[in-house]
Length: 348
Ligand code: SAH
Image (tube, rainbow, N blue to C red; front, top):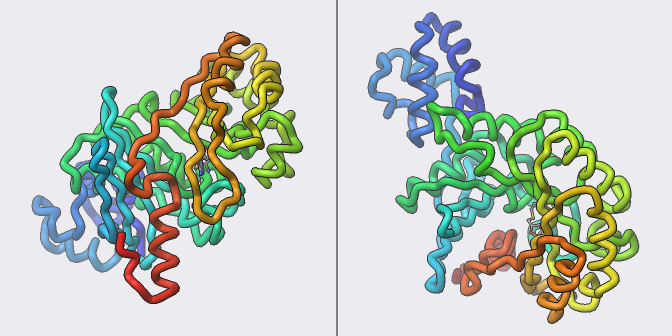
């Protein structure tokens, strides 16, 4: 069975031509898929025999809403989607002045093991297909009725651990006959997989790369991010400098402030030293309290920001949205999984 929505328009056209169809059918089918039809039957301008043939040979895997939480504070909407195989993933819709932004997942679970993150606690189950990433954008837009202009790949999963599918998703979501969301409206966040950063640098896409730094020294970073054993701080910054040289794009460094762990002035000074020669931007994130984690939010966010700024580094503090719902990545899925284990309703 062919996962039709994961194919590019060219590939769909080629496939339809093998079924004896004229070339224009590719554009038609692609258009239907990217409008969010749930069945081939809905593709009303296709001949009935073609609709039947597609239904027999191809699959569509639209997700269904398993849970939906709406923040009373700021209108943030969190979706728990059930995928065709029963797995669940999260998508968050945030409403900013510059447009509605969706934060999408790239994998079911995650195998990166960051000590402060809820998404990785039960490990990785599988990669998401390009269609499953696209559907998060598409069905969030359809369900909420809110037009989406920006995408961040910052939900569950490590995008560079599923890079082929992520690149294909980017091509799909960028297509003028589809959602047509420009690369400059897309951010991709990585925990620091160096070969992934190098591959993105080679491609020279106009997206924004976010690097989850969280500590500028190997001792601290290894303690909270196991990925640092494979790609240490030196190799990570080497890849980041190379990325900037090749693409000319400023990297955004994510930094979740953890009490007594990574919030000391010397660590701000070290960030400044590592960033020399590159216009980096540091995004300070007040740590989201994850019940299972021993780490607590830092009280030094403003002081740390000042210290970075004293070195001429732009540092912003991320405004936290959806504080009254489980809007930080992995938390809603975790709750649902725990409840399923106990055989009770999560009462979300
Ligand atoms: N795997 C990718 C993208 C998903 S995580 C990455 O690591 O970048 C998205 C961001 O949320 C990352 O910067 C991650 O480190 C951060 N994050 C995870 N758990 C958090 C928590 N409890 N509080 C604050 N930020 C968290």
